[in-house]
Length: 423
Image (cartoon, rainbow, N blue to C red):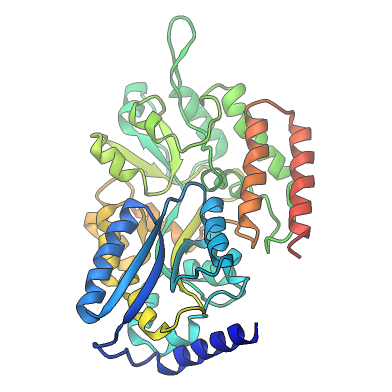
């Protein structure tokens, strides 16, 4: 253990001491990168490695591509690999995993090296401070991950379906009651009463469903992400509202895991909640008459955000060289490519607000426009467990397999036990 701690301390001191001077071009070595197999990230990573190798031709970069699935699975997979002794130089993850990995003292803090690196400071100056605050708050006030891209959750709506129903497009700020009225007008039934078009698809994933709690000024965990907040009456109110969209008002199909993108493309639903990631699919399928608006609110006009980043592990034998690769994967060229792939929002404001990036869908200025007020997804150190517990109980209630009071009691009890174990 002493040898491991000594090595980590040495790496940190080297990193802090030489960050203002890049390693020489003839440096040799191998760097290992742990990445998701997201199409956008693959393209950005491969291009970034080419730029890096143009500067450091004698450095080999090995990439471990890992499917995402659920965030919890991706995070757990990395931690299991680390436990086996196989630790990469760079780990890519979103805010969902920041606390999970940083709390284990696996990563080098980046604050000091950024303070002495003018190019890094210029990048951070072009990023919404609220995003950076969310990143550092998730890891005890220090920045362990350098931002790459991010996503929020907005409402996508098919303007053709609105026009056909004679329904006005949603306002940028609208209430739950206005949303319900709109969803009802956009739900169509045939002569037998069978629904042929739903107004909305209730998101079947943690990130997508979270704004329905935030817009009611509540969430699954209390501020600080250490205690269950399930017994907040506003949390129950949010769950009941979602249940009634499906089972009482019948403006949404049966609850199922997923984002609703296929149903939206097939014009089976008029509205879905998602980040920027559906845009390539919509364009590929010729859905060009689409707009976005903010999530409807009950008590608080807000949405959620998640932001990705690259962290340097303490196991890295050449952190200064690793830092140069991180900058290639997060810098101006990488940001432009994130904008071109359109699966996420570039971290840099200057790139995310260009005319090209904003040309589709309508009202795309709302994506980066929400960055100032959006709230980070709750991401405690045991995020994987919290996500699994939360979605399992939400699934049971929204499919009408348990009553609301039992759902609240069971979810609170299990979540409370889980949070106590990480205190």
